[in-house]
Image (cartoon, rainbow over all chains, first blue to last red; front, side, top):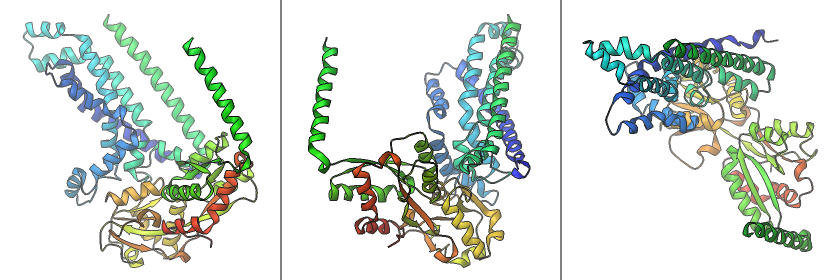
Length: 227
Length: 255
C-alpha cells in the first residue's frame, strides 16, 4: 500500500535537518546562554527577551519575515549573490537558518538555567587554582552544565522535527530538499490520504515520546550523579 | 446579591427579545453564517454589504482554507452556507450528509495568470519556453485547484518537464503569491483575483482552454436548510448584483 508513497525521503531529510540544526544551536546557543547567565550588563534581559521572541510569534509570521529577509531584497539575497543565486529561500540552508532561529529559545533557556544553577563558587575555586577563564569554562562550567546542555540539545532536536509553519513559508516543498516530515504529513491529510498520514504521524508520535522519555531519564541520572 | 440580579435581568431581556422576534414574523431581518474560502474574502465582504442593503439580512462571514472550513463543518460548526474554493468539498458535503442535495452551483470561476513583479519578465507562453528563471512558484497541485490548473497548462504547452526542476510549491494560492510578491520566485502561477487591483509587474492570463475550469462551488448546508436568510443569500449570490462584484474581482461567472 505504501510502497510507492516515498515515505522515506521526508523522514531522512527531517533527521538530517534536525541533527545539523541541533549542532548549530549548541554552537550558537551556548555562548549566548553563558553571557546571559554571567553578564552583569543591565540590558542583558533585553537580549534575553529577543532570544525568546520566537516562542511568541506565530511560526507563519516568523516564516513570512524570514521569506522577505532571505529574498532578493533582503540580506539573504545579498549572501545568495556570492553563490550566483537570487535568493536563499527554497534551500536546505534556508531551513537550517529558519530552524535555528525558531528553536533558539528552547536551547538557550535550559543551558542558561544550568549555568546559573552552578553558581559562582566553582568558578571562583577554579580561579584560585589559577585556571584561566577559558580553562575554567571548559573544565568546570561546561561539565557542570551538562544536564542543561542535554535538555537544550534534545528540545532543539525535537522542536525542529515537529516544526511546520516556518518550513512551510520558506521551503517551497521541494522533494528531497525542503519537503520535511511535517509538510509531508500535512500534504497527505489535505489529499485525504489518511493511511500514509497515519503511518508518518504515528511514527513521529512514538519517536517524540521516546525522545522525551529518554531525556527525562538521562537528565535525572545526570543530576543524581552530581550529588 | 448584585451578581444574582444580573442574570435575572438578562433572562428577562432575552425572553422579551425572543418574543419580539417571534411576533415580528418572517419579514424580520435574519442572519446567515457563511463559511468563505479565503481567496474570495474581498468579493464576499462586498457581496455581504450589498446583500444587507438589498434584503436587510445580515451575512456573517467566516474566512478560512476550504479544507479547514470543511473539517469544521463535519464537526457541526454552525455554518449555513459554504463558499468553497473548489468543487470537491461541496459535492462531498452533500454525499456525507452535511449539505443539501440540489443546492450546489458554481458561484465563481477562477482564472490563472502567470505573474512576475519584474516589469518585462512575463511576455506570454514563450516566457515558459525560454525558461530564463531559477524559481517558478505554483500552488500544491495535489491539493490546490490553481496548482492543478498550472500543471495542466504547462503540460498542454509541452513545457512541464523542462520547467519541473524549477518549481517551488506554495501550500495554497496565497502562499504562492507571497513567493512571487517577495521576489523569492521570479514568477509564478497565481489567481487573477490576487493581482487584478494592480498594474504592477508583468502578467500573462493563461488561455482558459489550457486547463480545466477552476469551479468554486457554493452549497447550502443542512444547518441552514430552514434559515430564510440563508436561502435568500443563495439566491442573491446568483443574481446580477453579486455577479458584477464577482467579475470585478477577477473571477468568471456562469452567466
